[in-house]
Length: 92
Figure 1 (cartoon, rainbow, N blue to C red):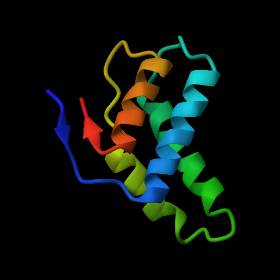
Figure 2: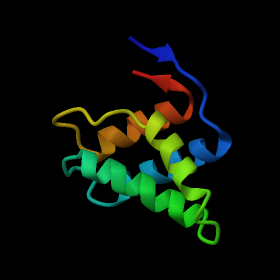
Figure 3: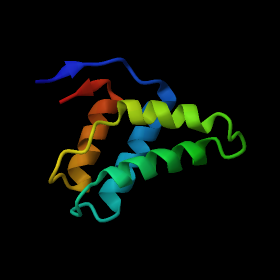
Figure 4: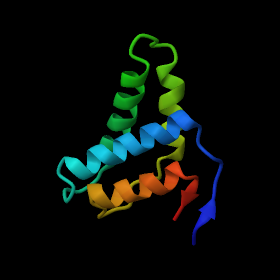
């Protein structure tokens, strides 16, 4: 079932798209895991706020709140598609 969730901020949508872009370019057929989900959210929040380290944690929390849990057996490109939906405020 598809449902509309709280809409992510513009920054969150941008970062979800950036993470998805990375996942489809770097080893897209490899398995996706929770560690990668956490690492990418942290990395992109830190990159965005490079000079303002106090803002990065809140951005990271928002990204993680909108990035769906990793489904067992998902590949990186499958998860990227889920992130693109989440960036639009939709969960499947």
